[in-house]
Amino acid sequence: MRQSKLFTRTRREAPSDEVAKNAQLLVRAGYIHKEMAGVYDFLPLGLRTLNKIIAIIREEMNAIGGEEILLTTLQNPEIWKKSGRWDDAVVDVWFKTHLKNGSELGLGNTHEEALTALMTEHISSYKDLPRYVYQFQNKFRNETRAKSGIMRTREFIMKDLYSFSKDADSHKEFYEKAATAYESIFKRVGIGEKTYRTFASGGSFSKYSHEYQTVCDAGEDTIYIDESKRLAVNKEVYEDPEVYTTSGIDKAGLKEAKTIEVGNIFTLGTRFSDALGLSYKDAEGKATPVFMGSYGIGPGRLMGTIVELMADEKGLVWPETVAPFAVHLVSLGKLGDEVSQVADALYEDLMKAGVEVLYDDRDTSAGQKFAESDLIGIPKRIVVGKDAVATGSFEVVERATGTVVKKTRAELLA
Ligand code: ATP
Ligand code: MG
Image 1 (spheres, helix red, strand yellow):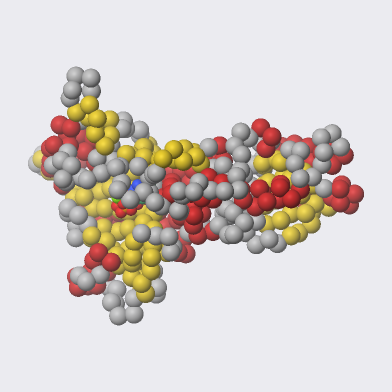
Image 2 (cartoon, helix red, strand yellow):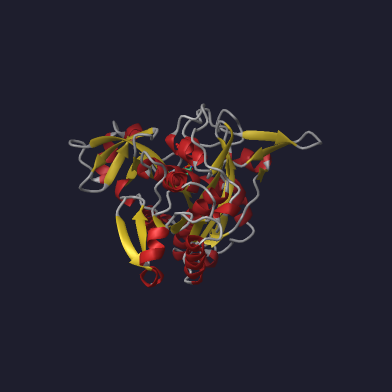
């Protein structure tokens, strides 16, 4: 993409009311726009990164047998009344609205109810199980504290997968597969080393759920880490002796850390299938409730976490797997001169070679171009100036380290 065609501008100052580092930098670099507290738009660069994160998650969900769907945001109160979660006293983040005729509707904050009700039309026999169904879908939550930029917003895309199994044992088997897929996702987006599988309160069915918690000072959670086991305990269950017998973690010697919850996996059991009448006939013809699990990740929160962990004083720094472009090609030429012509040709060649390139073809100063390039944070920068044209050797600057190597055109294309 030619940068002259990119409608977004970078800016020197972040919005004065923005406290989160991730939002400050993403706004300044033109990745996102702030509508109001906890509400953001994704602009071309931001959407490219968000979509890369989504693509990685999708690959991993498909690899464990996930089938992708897209449910509506609009929620039928009748279904939620059956599970007991329509009440604002039970779910405190509801956004609700009304139809013209006065009847109530909800904006989905999660989709256990809707999907469980839907699956009653598709699951009736043990032969229909297991099923693993997921979506990337907008959730609405009336969050009280929205000061963490894109890590806690009032509308956000969630990847939510729901598993439908015959019994607790087959559920457990899939649950572990999902855990492995999650670990692979966090590794691929570059936060694997700082992310811990964490025992947390489980809610309705099992005593514990698992959260994936990433160590970061900007986090809102506190966990206690057992480094040798790569496991942790959330503060909310830290005083519970049973968590240590269940997990095999030794309470002595745990290390406290501030963390961001990037994902979680839940055993739901028959909480929703009982409430909404989702059962199957086993081999003997006996009606049995379906055993469920749910598995969430917020791609936007993941993107914010990557920024919090990797950005430096000059701006954003992206791992290659989620960067909006692989290469930032920066031309120091003036319209039509030899430098511009060499840069244009290199741009075309890189595109033909299948490299994703952002090409700074604008008529601005070198200093401004480099500062903006640092802010935008594309992993590699190739500089085309008079020197490069004279010597045939191009400077390649690695954004994360500042390392500079020289490469010929042939080496670059290879
Ligand atoms: P938290 O405790 O941080 O509010 P949660 O327990 O409400 O999270 P879930 O309902 O389990 O989160 O949602 C699944 C995933 O969706 C979370 O692990 C997180 O990655 C993401 N997520 C949750 N709330 C938000 C939000 N307000 N903005 C962005 N992402 C979110
Ligand atoms: Mg929440």
